[in-house]
Image 1 (tube, rainbow, N blue to C red):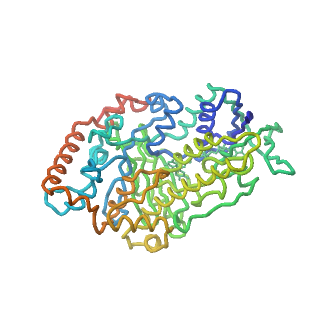
Image 2: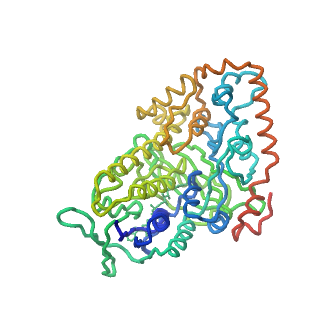
Image 3: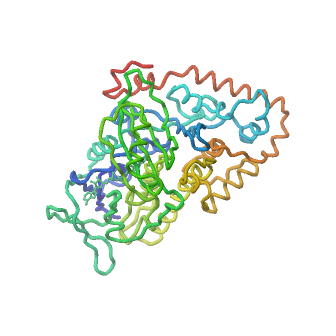
Length: 507
Ligand SMILES: Cc1cc2nc3c(=O)[nH]c(=O)nc-3n(C[C@H](O)[C@H](O)[C@H](O)COP(=O)(O)OP(=O)(O)OC[C@H]3O[C@@H](n4cnc5c(N)ncnc54)[C@H](O)[C@@H]3O)c2cc1C
């Protein structure tokens, strides 16, 4: 058993890793985390997807306390504006359309009946969508049998506060934090394994296993081990982001229970509502829009007043060829980066940590475990990447060179296969390993204006009158439940008001 683990980096990735290792590994494992006050964390990363709740629950974190301490809000999905066409608006909401009928997904019946005057747009059968449009949120556990509880939720939080929260949590579990800048990495001459890192102060820290959470610097996995990078920017060309925080207009401003992603001329702009402020950013491709113009675009499109100086971040979408090499594993931005459209980064961090713990090596570092981890992480990144490409490629926009490029680019074969399968009869060629459930794919495909040629043939075995009745009932139940929900502001004030929201009046 390996006992001496060194984590380099104390951003979200570093502290999530430290917390999980101290929770899930036996007590004799000694976990030390090195971070440098001289090197800032990336400072963004505020929107998450529902799997984060599994991570927090695995640590035994109290949700109310965590939300209070990180100024968190609830997230029911992402609102996409101007993606299919300028003026269009759809939600990737974390829940299901209606109920299946005779084991066939709801959307097949909807496709058959969509032209009937009583049939509503498909999202009106979706609980988290209806709650989102009214800025409502009710804190419910998922229940598959009840149409008003067939949804999941995630959080929007201050990622810096989340790392601080996990630091406190990890230190209480015995993790040692070491302040200092790593200036040198020593490897074994024969094996290339990392033996120690040296800090600016001269202190040398030895370890058996090193986890690289050093962010875009990738100090160990790339600067030292040089594993190489798979660049995916030909499919996901955005490579810059301006980020800024803004204030709410006043204490009564409704806090939306969703993240907004508004497509612009060469990328898109995020708006992530926290309890006390929003996070805003323009993600763009520098080859199609200059940095100065992108900053103007961001400031034109924000709603409140900026409360800090906008910051420019640079990245290239892709991943390391290997996340685990020798006795080093990269987790977080050091491992790779998929642009933030679907809030996948923290979920990939969580996925990597849990998969690594499951395949935790012994001192012999058997190659099979390394290979298995790398194989599964390749799949996770590639599937998430394909989901992102879908949003860009399925556009009908032709108002800029950027959208022309995205609409006409050649996409990965596996994604093309999924699109073809959907076009045929509205099925999703889904895999168990997917980060997103089948419905997420459906919502984006429908949302971007894609229309299958036909539907599941089993639909025709149910009387159309019966289908109409069921559809009407589901729509009414969803609308009634959404209306009865408290507003998101009310739920936050009652459940988890942080310092700043406690003075707010609810909507
Ligand atoms: C524009 C943008 C928007 C994003 N939005 C989202 C989002 O909405 N949702 C989401 O899930 N993710 C998002 N992400 C990704 C998310 O921010 C990161 O995945 C997450 O914060 C993890 O970062 P990290 O810990 O890997 O790196 P960092 O936060 O950069 O931390 C690196 C750490 O390494 C330390 N370090 C570096 N070099 C040294 C050294 N030599 N010695 C000692 N310490 C060192 C630093 O001090 C720091 O503690 C976004 C990213 C970007 C760029």
